[in-house]
Amino acid sequence: MGPNVLPFSRRKLDWVFVAFFLINLYFVTYIVDIEQLIIPDPYHYQQPPWPPAAMVKLIHGYGQMYDPLVMARPQWWKMTI
Image (cartoon, rainbow, N blue to C red):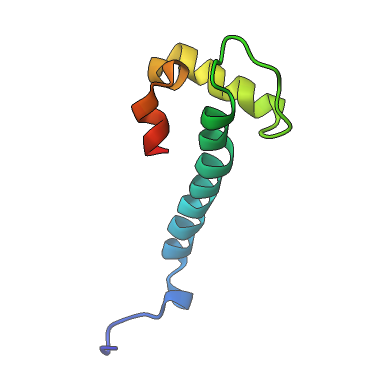
């Protein structure tokens, strides 16, 4: 390392960024993406054991309000997940 390079343990703002991206990675992967694959029809479904019902409602509310692709679930969309 050069003389002006701070080690990661001393870069506090970098820790914030890493925490933000890790939280989002796990939220998107284990809640949003799983919901997209487990529930094929968001308008007629039986609540699965995972993700929690509150998260399913949150995802469906977001899809209905802002992102119709989340509700449409085309095959190419599932393939990218």
